[in-house]
Length: 341
Image (tube, rainbow, N blue to C red; front, side):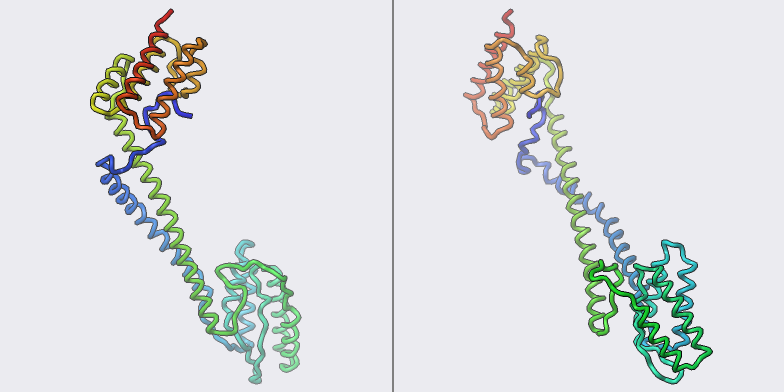
């Protein structure tokens, strides 16, 4: 619903070529955008580096074969890290142990025999279950130091198989840590490269979206400032007579659209001066028509004046001299009716 005082035409923006200052406004918007995106690029770069560093901590290359003594030491250190960690940090401790043993393909026994451990029970998503299984494994390894090695290692192999957790049919992957350890080194390299590509693409998309948002926001500010300057260039008439004189001056220069607008403003000021409508600029044209008067003839003329103004100001109809003269005559008729007691 249009407002009672249409001092700004916001529903129909003139082309930018109509305003010579538009080029300066566009340059100002681009400079503001460049200054705003500078810190944003540094923040995005820091975010990417932080993600990469965090991922690199857990992806450091480790040995593929270790002795059973070193394996036992790592298990004990993992248990101590989990026992001393806060509840919120237990998953991180499990993840650190998982990354440490990521590349282990075989455990070398004192007699040179190699066994392939299944360490999938080390699960950051189930730290308590992982800790319980680590304690069981530590107990078996401790007992094996005072027993027949071959027999105890066979028990160790069975223990590793028994504590292998049952996996659900579906589990959301934990990022950035992968939920499986590929046997193929080339596949692992491809996965690592893909992960970095996803991170960089996500960062670029984030910067693109924020840049578009900032550009639109700053262009809105520039257009708002332009409208404010244009509105300030045209002094608002203070009386119905002054508005009528400004309308005649604009019509003489061929600015019929602004002339029709000032004719309508002269009528609104006249209604206020006569005390027919209150001075409330939040009222719409239809609300003005509803409360202006109960006289059918007066309401009919007022309706015609409002509808003509809306077609000219809010529509695409460009008025000419004949339109201005007809509208002025309609305003004069309505003014005479207002003066009739």
